[in-house]
Length: 441
Image 1: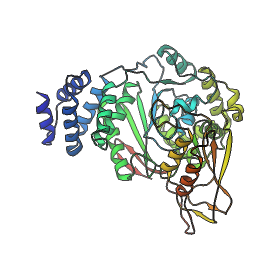
Image 2 (image 1 turned 135 degrees about the vertical axis):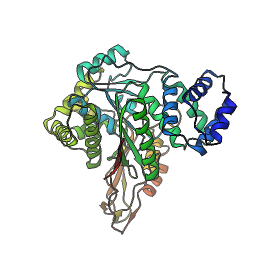
Image 3 (image 1 turned 180 degrees about the horizontal axis):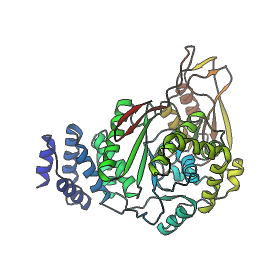
Image 4 (image 1 turned 45 degrees about the vertical axis):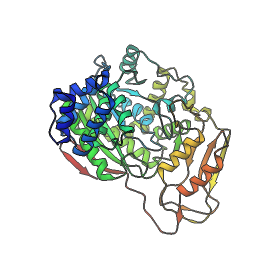
């Protein structure tokens, strides 16, 4: 079937066959199918959608367009976790050593961040000497020995997805659930995971602002996993305010250390326990959620989770002293308090705006060429629903360069409105999505 016929078929709402989707992706990746035809197909998908099988076929076609990481030499079920992104999303830094301490291998391929703050690799590189530049053989050996390692993504992982995403970005076809779901899942599957736990964010600071859309995305990704033989479960969680208190790189590493010591923010701790519980259950090593959660809580209490973090850091050439003495992590030139201008109650915290302010200070990248300053960021002191008195710090700004400081102060004040109406903190865990359906919480 010609490319025009494939476009027409999808335009008319008909279902594409596996070989038609594969031919389309292969042709586009090789350059045989031009951008204008792929744009037409993406717009047809945007309006007509895709069936579960079509979405799974698209996912696997993108997986097969490039390298696939072979983790078969790693002992046990490899469970990966993916977040759809947010502000102060420190979960991987806590989850990787915590789940590994429970005996379940965590073999994670991560990238660098483009946006509010650095990605997982950028955050970990706040630790002196830490390296993710690993050969696959070294990566596998580290996971078998320590149960945890993080490696940078290979350049040729899912090239079809990279090419298609860039096209979608300039053709107003990003907001298509089948295309989003296949983009995310293709990278997870190519990275070699046996099972996948997804943290699908919803709220003002999330990609999916609307909770119903977040649930639909979660269902689409779980369905892909089912079709391609990867056990998959999704947790829909709140991102209407930043997760935890820290937004940055070194400041988030410090918060992760506190969490593994049992002194972390309540919301970050709870989300990590929920996600970690699902990872342990999917591994098949734990009989049920209750046993899995009890194990994770005990690992934090006993100090074994923190010890695993140090083992992980040492394995990748990082300095473990900085885990024991987090004050030796990169520090800003100035810490500037942002004080409340009136008494009252924190009505909301606009997560996306806080993230953009952190990026303005140098904690993130507006373009991939930008350099991240690991020392800068924002440390919140209040959450939604908290009382505050005039002159009390709402946040601390970790600053090295001051050219954007006044703008950041103004935007941060607007991002944390204070009023007199009592408000409740938003519900953190909204639902869990499994192959059997949606479990509201």
